[in-house]
Image (cartoon, rainbow, N blue to C red; front, top):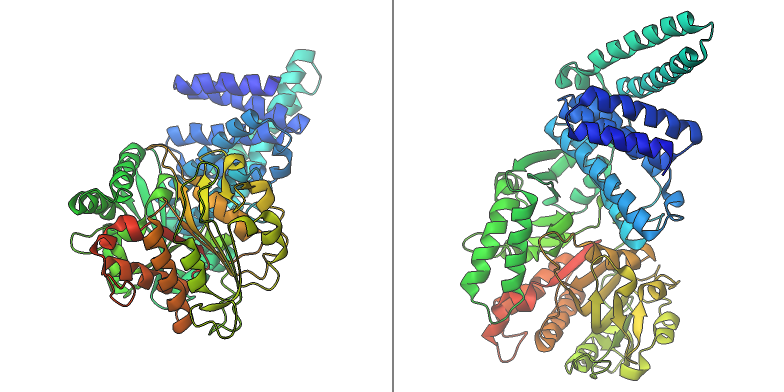
Length: 581
């Protein structure tokens, strides 16, 4: 451990003891050393710690400036983090995530919603980088904009530290410039204090003078605007989970972003999600149990938005989920009378920044070739999926005379489905349908996999080598599962597996939160593709109709009209991530 880290840790001890002046003294020394030797990671940590200190001193405006600079320093060293050990990376990224969350919380509390949304976008990208170990995940970014006063604060603070260090060295060596250095230090200190006072002006007054903060075209708000304007009556919702509360941010018509605070702590939310998942993914659980658990989460995450939903006649809900909310089958939330899916189309995005809305599936079926791959045999300790052959037959039209299939294309089953088959048949395909077991492991992307028809595992590193996904608009993973580890889980494995396909060029991914009945999955998939092919509707709407066909027992979809498919276990697991158009 270097001297800068030692000083930083001593400062942390004083911070925990609420001895703030002493803590700041050590942080300043640490910051000077980190900058002197070019230790960007140490600089970012120390800036964040100074932000923590200022927040505890009830100086939110000043804390925001230091948190912003901490985030920006972090954004400049993505590549450098790859040389750290896994333990070092995890320790560092936990600290970084705390900085993002603390910054967003302060910004929202001050009504600076557009800035907060920009921070949340960076946070989601940062989380994906951490999970995938990919320094480039989330694309390139220049960080977060500081306003002119904040830039002055950071610049003058740097000068203050530098002069203070010179004065200390001069005292030790008894140099002749001590008087001059003291005068310069006093001048810089006075200038810094004046800037701090300017920063503390009422936020409304300052924002009124700074048009940059009111212009969504200069911030991530423009990406939110693209999503809500991609189809009429759409809202983009950001649940933001903190230790002591939930913030709900949303963007609706015109890209206007608003927020509301929900007094539910992270532990309460996590426990409620666990309880909901336990009953919703058990087909033997009572429907009243499911609806009661779903109602609790509805009241926290949706009910506060009801006035907005009604005022704007919202029909499409797009979620950018956070932490444990990623495990929630949103469509199964219950308002006391109906499931959410009965009133709205529901989709999710990894982040607004990572969503490409420029592409849609061609109308009709002729220009939408599909590559369908499946496993029906029991292999490698996994159960058989006997309905997969019928699922693929109903989706793929092999020959022009084939009256059963929907989309033209090719299909490979069991032993014919190996990695080479997947890799070599992607060119020109618009849809990639994979009906096989899959397991997405929390915190261990290298252990997550899809099961090939040969019984071998298709690993994440192999998915990352696929070169011909740029033509693929939609990837469907119809028989996968994500285990919920507990109330503290963050759900990044769900975002992660989708990201691997999206990062290789696919526009959207449909996956399941748990492994569903083979029979009902086959029916839902057939309905989904039939809806998509027969109507000029979005993928999100096609999925919703397929889910409703199981919920309501559509006779045209199931000859036996089996009522057990109405349980959310059968239809709620399926989620659409990315471009829902």
